[in-house]
Length: 410
Image (tube, rainbow, N blue to C red; front, side, top):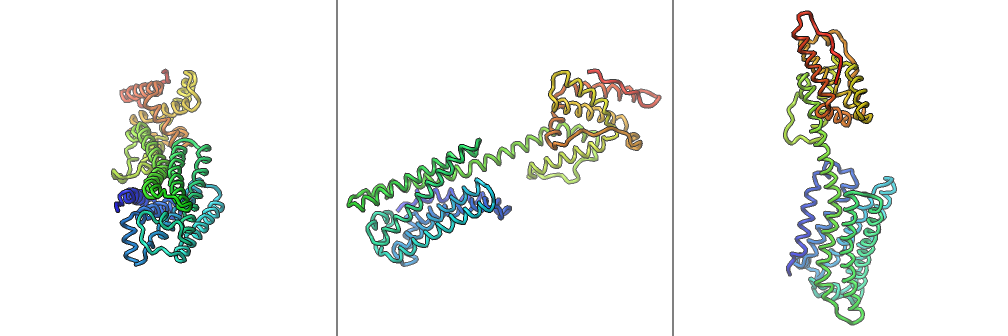
């Protein structure tokens, strides 16, 4: 009565469920999150209650021989429905149509589960069978129909899932397509489970004995199918989240050069609250963008559109595309403004209310990242920064006031 083949998949499903609970708590109204959690709960229950030690314990506690059979078969039926509901919500579409389709699957398979209970009550299964209930009672009235019905319901769900995932995989790419193909493979194992069970039961109907298929071959196939399918469900979600997190952290790092540039010229834009190490990357990016925009406001009186126009023209002449040229031009203007601000510690330009137009960041972080990249890597921006530094030095050494602006010559 070793239940290792059942308890290991049950433990894997339980761990997956524990990992999903925080997300469910934060987005309980999301049908997809609820569907995933319900599926994991039912998968855990199926493997836990299908283990021979659990079957024996439930039968003994209730005092009803083989009561575990309809319990496990009802759980399997509801699990099949949860898989179909999950794929419907995952695929998306008009909300009303999604809810209507999900409701049909739930009601249909709930009705099947109710019929399974009725058939068990009408039937007679007095001898406890821990592993070979299907074949031992294959010719018993009502119990025979119960066995055929649960296998048929499971097969329909497996075929439907395989067809839906296969068609969907032909329309998508990336991790989602990989996940869907893995799900199809997992349901291939589930269909093999159904085939071995049907073969063993049919053999009993015809007076033959192929019980080993049901007793020893089918359970490992069910375990493999559930684990492979679970990987297919989880992999796209996890990989997409990791990819999004990687992109967010990459954006945060790429904004570093621009943030340091404006932060050095305007220390007052430093965040008021120091963020903890566990602060999400999304919050860090938002804070960094906010600091940069505050820095632009601080540097506004020192922006000189002549620097931008000259750098823009030179970048286009050097073969840069439109977006790159704009980023280089804005970066050049920012670099010159930072140097001009350092030459005006008293903030005379701020009091005078002078200044040009701030960099265009209508595309949000994308434009800021381009400007930050140009600040670090563009030779044109480096030339503007160097020229501005020379201008600042000349102005500081002059005793007759601010020096005249020196034209940009990269």
